[in-house]
Image (cartoon, rainbow, N blue to C red; front, top):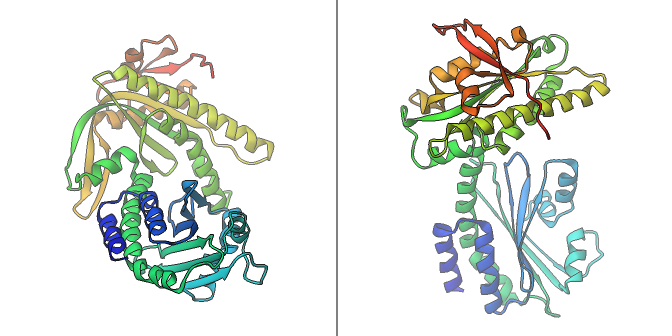
Length: 392
């Protein structure tokens, strides 16, 4: 047991995932004589896509992962779990003989009984209250007729603090990595976590730039409650952001009803970046049209989108105040792409591009819409309108 505790502490320093800990813990407990049918580590999450997850291990099946969403089904699953029972009754420990049909039975017990489980033990450990991840649950199901011995039950209490510390370290690292990616994007979060955290840290890069703006959004605020509008806005941003990310773009920020994304050039090949940006733009417009069609069928308001595309050098890094930074892209090209979008209604086209962008692709899909004086830009710029037909 001393060796197991030492191993768990080492995992707290070196392990990269709960799965890795579980993969090593299960066989070690088996070697110590625990008659394991199934072992599991369960933790809550603040991920926007899931409320919690569990990592299970079984001798014949190895590691498996299960997660619960934030929807009604996920909530119902959680309320039918042993962990919910313990939390609702202010308990940190529970034990049930299996099979059971008493008042405290749970759907999980039927699954375990089907595996030949005879005994189920779960212990919770609470984490400090400064983060939303409140703690960790560790459970064991035995397949021996007599279940777990008193010595084995005591052993769980002995190694649980080390297991909780290891899970806490992994969970907080995952929290920092995953949530930073949610708020800043995967590429940007990687730069931040690698140490680019000082104001001015960054570099000049060549990139294709995409700027999307939802039309007539302001007028909706005068006719609909904020909750309804936020729901619509999120749906449209999902329709736009999905293609951007699928095509390798990095969404830098949402600005009210607008979105800014970059597609960094790879291997000094701007045409590849521009091609990905164009594909994202066309798919975004198509997805937005489909969303509007479904909303029109319900008699609800629709939001059109205009997309502007440009290519050029941008500064990609930290700007802002010393204690409140924004990792984003700035530069002449960023200003210009936002100005190009403003003339979409003038040329009656939802996808516009600068002359350098259109020239980089050398495609017949763009046609010159003329030269325009853009606000804040000294020389008139030639703007191209997308007239091509894309096969999907």
